[in-house]
Image (cartoon, rainbow, N blue to C red; front, side):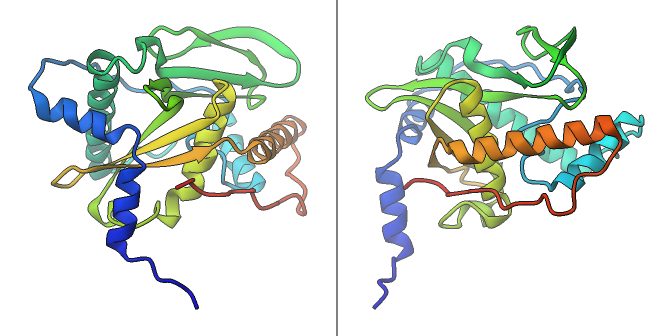
Amino acid sequence: MAIKLKKTDFVRNLVKNHKLVGAIDKVIGDEEFEWEATFGPKTGDDGWHPSGDCLPSAHALYAMASASLAGEERKRPATSLMKSFQVGHFWHAYLQWILVKKLGYADQAAIERRGYKGWGDEVKPRYFGVNGDGVKAVHRPYFYATGSADTAPCSIPVHGDYLVDIKTMGAHDFKQMQLPTWCAGKYEAQVNIYMDWFDLERTIILCVQKDSPHAFKEFEFRRNQPLIETIYAKWSLVGACLEAGEEPPEDYETDLPLVGPRM
């Protein structure tokens, strides 16, 4: 006979296992403090990105990259979505400030830390990055991947080093017992690539409810090496197909070995 887990029991267990939320809430509740942040538009590049290119099929990636190489401009997001982006920027900057300046769990260099991985022959370096980190791309278009992790590493007393990835979400998604199905696999794949770049074994996905009461909760992921290798293999294949001007093989697609969060 299956045992049904009450939602209240799940929430208690989730809170009990939190490693970061309690410390952040204490800082916010103890006092007001000055803080600052700077926002700027992202610069484009011709590489793969953990944030959005892990789950799409090889054919979808091929079509997207082909359009980019042909000079086609991406459609600008709707105004309502741009507003949501700014809310997300606020929470990222605020929480990252707390991790560095108030808790001392991370160095400034760990914030928006740029990562890079390339394959194949190197070419003339091209420099790009965030916060002046000056990462250089030394591989052909779509023969590399790059992106910025929110915090890597975050050293939490007693618990050790983690990648921390901040995700803002509406109340409907936040109140679900697990990560929403539409984003759970995407998040797992993204943080695994970051863990590979920064030699980390564990990730905390810090969820922020955008609606009042602006609650926090967290999920923990462990490094999934088969998933990492599967993603790299797909990116490498599509890069080679782009260079050859041939679409990926019809029978290439495989399921990603996702395992979900560790509770």
